[in-house]
Amino acid sequence: MVSKLQTTIKYWRWWLGASNSKGHGVHSPFVFDFIIDLLNDDREFYAFQQIENSHKITKPERKVNRLLFRMVDYYQPKNIVNIGNGNNIQTQYLAAANHLIEMNTIKETDVYSLQSSIDKIGKLDFIVFNSNKSNDTLNQFEILLSAFHNNTFLIFKNIHLSKEAEANWQSIQNHSSVKATIDLFHFGIVLFNQDFKVKQHFKLRF
Image (cartoon, rainbow, N blue to C red):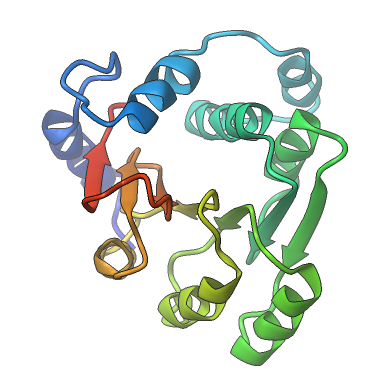
């Protein structure tokens, strides 16, 4: 685990190498739309105040959860799966984006338990990996592969939390099934969309 000072230094190094959040120089239509319609969306949804008035939420946590909310509201996945110990506040944001979405939490790290749970759900639309510390992360990713489809969104939290987390992130970026990734420092987005003809990785200031 890195210290708070190390995290701050790492963040500013990342920030200097990341693209601006205005979409300038981004040639992917999908990522450009993501920047314009989601990263730059400053609307105050009613659900934000409902949740944030009931909980003490740090600024980074609020920022991340608001973007997850906007992603669910914008892309309208049919199901959401939290892998690991997703906190209650995050779940409230995700559920508030669309009350009709099927919400699932899978706490088991055992690969066989994970496979059984996924078999019951079927194809996965929006998955959040809440922990990136475990050595099992890559094994879990491999198990989930058969349930991913062209429009699946895979979210990895804390991708720069430790050397192990960064190694996991790099391995997933390099996986043959992955078409594009978006590094927002606090979390990463993995895409499988075949519209990306060439594998692309983006770092966006957030």
